[in-house]
Length: 373
Image 1 (cartoon, one colour):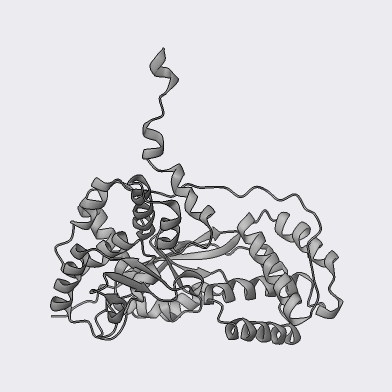
Image 2: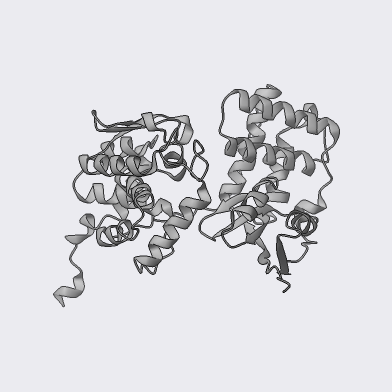
C-alpha cells in the first residue's frame, strides 16, 4: 500500500507596517517549518497577527518556494508584486555607501545598542543614501534632509514613528561619523496617535492563568503577570535570577539594557519550586525541548493563545496585555506611581502615567450628569 505525504500549506500575503511594505507568512505550528523560516533574513514573529513577517522583495516568493520545497505548499494567491512601492523606484546603494553603512553598523554595535535599534537606524540611513542617489556624505546638507522629509516621507504618507526613526538615524550618522550637525527644517508634523494600553480585569487574568494544567505553561504566564515582565525579559531569565531568600527577581538587560529587580511573593516562589522539580531546567528558567536553550517566542505565544481560548476570553490578548494589567491593577490598589515606574523599568514617569487613564479607580467616583436628570 502506497502512503501519500500530506504537506502543510503556508499562506503568503502583502502587508504594510509603519509605512514599509512587508510580507505576512502564516503557517501552522511545526518545528521544522519554524526552523526554516527563522533562517530567512530579517524574519520576525508578529504576535498580534499570528504570522511571521519578512521584508518585501520581488524575489520573496521564489525564496519561500526554495526554502519550503518538499516541506509545505506555498499559497501566494493573496500576494502581488508591488510595482508602485516607492522604495523600488530608488537606485541601489553604491559600494561606497555600503561601506559607510557597514562602518556605522559596527559603531552602533560597539556602543552596545540593541539589535532592533541597529536595524532601524541602518535601514533608515540606507534609504536616505538611496534617496540622494548615493551622494557623497561630505556634500550633504540640511536642504537634503529637508527634501527627504518633504519629497519622500511626507509625500508617501509614512507614519510619524517611521518618520522619526528615519530622521534620527540620519542625524546620528552625520553627528558621529562626519562631525556634522543636520537638523530638518521646520515641517508641520502630524500628531502621533495616543493609544491606551489594553487591560484585562482581575477575573479575566485569573481565568487565563488557571487555564493550563501544565505546570510550566501556568508558571510562565503567572510570572509575566506577577512581575510585569516583557516577553524578552521572561525568556531571558536564568536560574540564578530568582533570589528566593530575598524574595526578588533580577531582570538583566531589560529594555534599554537596564537592569532592575522586582519583588516576588511567597506564592510565586512556591510555584517556581514546583515547576523546577518537575522540569529540571539547566540554565534558563524556562527552556525549550533542547536542555540549556531558552524557550522560544513562538512557544510562549502558542501557550498564551491556548490559555485565552480555554479561558473563553473573546479579546485579541497579547502577552504585553498581562504587563499592562499588572501595572493597572497595582495603580488601582493604591501603589505609588513612582514605585510602579521603577517596577516596570520606565525611564520617565510620563510613560507610566498612561495607566492612570485606564485605571478603574480613577473613574469609579465620577458621577455622570445623566444620573441627575
